[in-house]
Length: 406
View 1 (cartoon, rainbow, N blue to C red):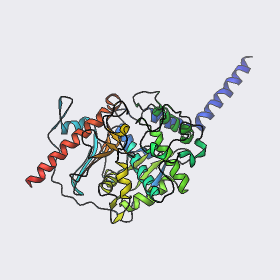
View 2 (cartoon, rainbow, N blue to C red):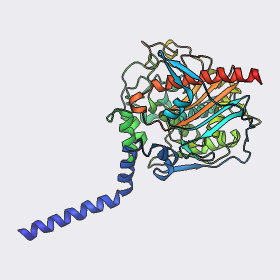
View 3 (cartoon, rainbow, N blue to C red):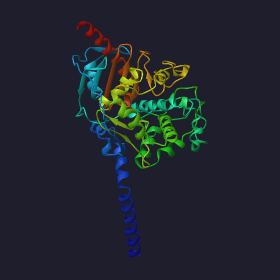
View 4 (tube, rainbow, N blue to C red):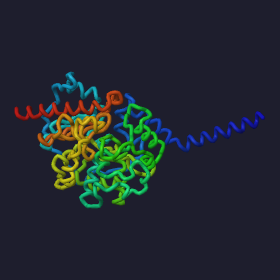
């Protein structure tokens, strides 16, 4: 009997060992994902995502756009938020800024790197990737391959019977799909964290998207659902027959004149994490912002249709307007995967968790881009987005004053 128990135990241990060996990379990735935002490793993780997750590569442009430089400006002064004063330099430190670049009239007037980030180094975009995905949607919308009010299930029939059944492309772009989703990164059991763990162990992101359910009528409430962007990526892949990496290389990386290589994180099926898996340098993130500010024109090319840019920032429904708390879960306005700050509705921004931003002020011809590893984000939440937008506005005011003195 003892011998029999020993034999069974040995077989069990061998099976367990085999499972661990066979799934070692997935287990290692899951552990890494759970500790991704830990204070002592967050900056290194954000700068080295390709070391831990599978990626598809983007090659630097054959016609790189080298931005002119006139570095005379230094961020300084204070900004006020909810009755408190914050020193700008200290706030940049407190939010663990890894890179900050400021352009005026498409010229770099300030550029600095911290936390070991280097100018040519890739850094995770998080949700800034959504604005890149939107740009690709706009390029193919101009080709008249679909209409914005078409239901996405017209092109993705496998989503019939899911929370996305009948949802229009427009409402996906506006984060108004009506799909229920908890995007609280501080909640271990939230939908977005469930998504991260499912991705880490190799679950297809398409199947995860199909698991979501409708929570309210589409087009009535602005609620941030990252998977909405992923469904837009599935649409692009369906109508073009190309991967998001191929589309990004052809329509954005090459014509925008990206100076450095980039990459998209992909799942086990080589499907890009379009909701937040882009990796690029600080300078190259900035170029999409410059392009939008210049009505889609950059590096000698009309890259993004100017009408698409206009439509992307048009808040023509009440639930998209900043401050409509009863119609939105966000204080800021929302366009086609772009934020419209409540404190300056002439500006707009792409934004990612842990304080990644490209902030565009077309009136003053200024673009500010910031990469961060703010490990406090889980506790501070989206209030830090508002604080950054207020800080950016103070920096812009100071730049205009500084320019008048030159």
